[in-house]
Image (cartoon, rainbow, N blue to C red):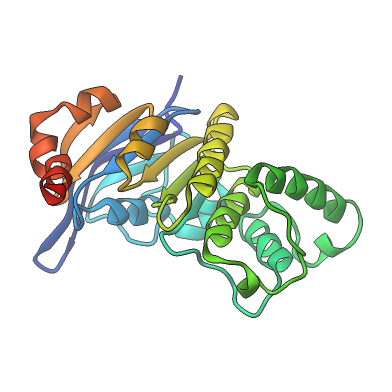
Length: 253
C-alpha cells in the first residue's frame, strides 16, 4: 500500500531559529499518527508545511504520490487535505450552514451558490445530519456561528473537515478545552474517518488521548525527530521521557 502522505527530510528556519530539521515520516490510508513534543518542538510548523501555509527550506512533501512541495495551500486542499486548528476558525457574522458550505466550496466539493438550490443542498443536509448526530448535538443551522460554545465549535470544525471527504486530515490539539463527553465524540469521529481510509495527523498534549487513538507516534524536540514508533515504544523511550513525558511527571510532583 502506498503512503497517502509522505514527508521527506523537511527543514524550516525562521531567521536563526530552526523550527523543523530533517523531519521525515509517512502515513498510509487509514492510519492515525500522533505528533507530540514539548512546546516549541515544531509540531504546528510541521502541519503548516504539510498544508502549504509555510514553504519548505529543504525537503519534499507528497500527497497520494504527487509532489506538492511547491503547490499552494488551496491546491493541496483540493487534492484532499483538510485541516483543523488549535483555536477554531470560522467566518464570523455568518451562519453555521454558510460556514460549512463555504468550507466545502473551498475544497472544490460543492458550488457555494448552487448549493442553496436543488439536489446538492439536499445531499449536503443529509450528510450533515449524519455527522452532527455522531458529534452528539443538534443546532439551528441558520444561527450565527458565534452562538455556539467553544466545545461545539471545536466539534463543528472536525465535522466541516469530514464533509470535504478528505484523504488526509491534520488535526491540531482537538482535545484542548473539551469536556470528557466532547472528547469522546472527537475520538469517535477521528476513528470513523480512519475506518473510511483517511490518513490523520493529530497534535495533542493530552497523552492518554493521543496514545489511545494513534497507530504510531512521532516525537519532535527542538524541530528534530526524537523518536518514532508505536505508542508503547515511544512512551517507554528514555529520551522521550526525559524530553517530554518526564516534564509532565516532574511538574506534578
